[in-house]
Structure formats: structure tokens, C-alpha cells
Image (cartoon, helix red, strand yellow):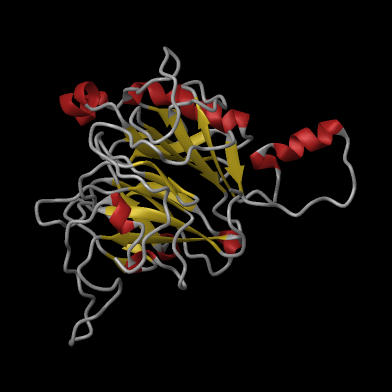
Length: 328
């Protein structure tokens, strides 16, 4: 690849975390904010530090235990962001043998799919937006036997979707022409308002609908709920904030396994997400879905892959910084 994200020098394997990777130095990392010109009372400052109550909040990474509490050795690797932030932009990438959005001689969008891993999809030429690679990313859709994404995947208005595009739920961010009007949605099939069909990634297993939690293990089957327990997911709150979460004991970070800090079945994520939303002033969980049924989570933030699995994936959801980089 011409462009490779500068990661700590190591190699990942299927069964073990690589040694020698640079570890996270702090509990959380957040986009830099403009300093205030004068001191504020302690109570006011504490309130402003809560992500959802600071209008300048953009994106933040941290780790939690299974109660959604901040924990530097937590198993839950979390990215929260405000889709309306004018500091952020978004894109979807899929595994292609050619440039994203490229057309053939008849003027039709080319869709020649090839197998690509999470690492490749977030770092190839197609991962760039306005010449820049993403500051954050999470794995998304499944891949079929022809290397094609299975669900509804749309990258900046161009569809790269599969056979289940109208049957499985998808997550997306609307067109960002006016950032304050951006919306994050989770729904099945294309949205009625076309502006919402701008960046979408497919997944499977919607376990929050209209603010109500559902145990979806019966829908997912035995493998996804008894054998594979590592997970990637997304949630949207009633205040419009987004939570991306990967729960994987093989993550490339320091984790202390305990009763309240371990891989979970889907029925265990209610408490995690509710805790994250409450502790970060994000409102209440409105919609949530799994990106995978286990075994394929991937999470990247600020030049580091925290979770990576070796198999090819259908798509990845990418986040870009328009102005500043996350704190390192």
C-alpha cells in the first residue's frame, strides 16, 4: 500500500496481542478545545467537562468496565462523538480493486470487490478524504462469498450494498452540507429522507429500538451468543450523540479481566451503554445495533489499532478531523 497508517511497530496475530505496541498513556483522549479566558467556578467547570454538556465537544476515546465506568484497564474500548461537530467529517470504505466512486466506460459506478482486512480498509487510498486518512474507524458490515458487503453500505451518496440491504439494520450519518443539521440514524433499509442516506454501513442485530432494549440472542443463534463473545457495536442517544464500542479481550491494550470487566453476551450491553451515556451526559440510549456477530471487531483511534481481527470485512465507518488532531 502506498499509504500506511503509522502504527506502533508490531504485528498482530489471531490468538495473541502483539508485544511492544505503544500503550495508551491516559485514560481518555479528546479533541483539543479552545481554552477559556477566565477561571470558572468548580461546579461549572465540572459540568463543562462532561462531554454532552460541552457544546465544543467533538470526539473522545476512553475505556470502561461493564458498568460503563471510566477504567484505564477496561475491556470496553469506546469512542463517543457529536455528529454535528464542524470539526468532523465522515466516510464509508469497502474492499475494492479500484478507486472508490470510479466509473466504467459507460459512466456506471464500478464495483469490483476484493477481500480486505480492517487494517487495509482504513489505510488504503480509498480511505482518504480530501487527502487525509481517518482519525478513527470501526469495522462494519459482513462480507459474502464473493467478497461483497452484505448489507446497506453507502459512501458519500454512492451505494456499495448487498443482498440484505433492505432486511438488516444499518448505521449512518446524514449529509454534512450544514453540520448543525447532521443526524445519526439506525434503521432498516434506506431512509425516507434521502439526505439521511449519505454515509451508511450495514451490520446485524439491532438490540435497541425506540429507546427499548431487547435481548437478541434468540435471533442471532448459538454461535453468536455462546461461542463468539467479542463484539463491536454502535448506539445513538436521544440527544443525537453516537457511541462506538468494541468489547474484546484480545485488544491491544492493558485489560484486567474480572466479573465486571469481561467479554459479554448481547444481553449484557444494556448496562454498559446506559452507564456510558449517563457518565458522559449523552442522554438516554435510543437505538443500538451490533456491527458483527463476534470474531471480527476492529477499532482504530489516533494512529493506533486497539482491536483487529485477521479476516476480511465488508465495510468500515471512518471519521476524519477537519481541523485539529486528537490529543496524543
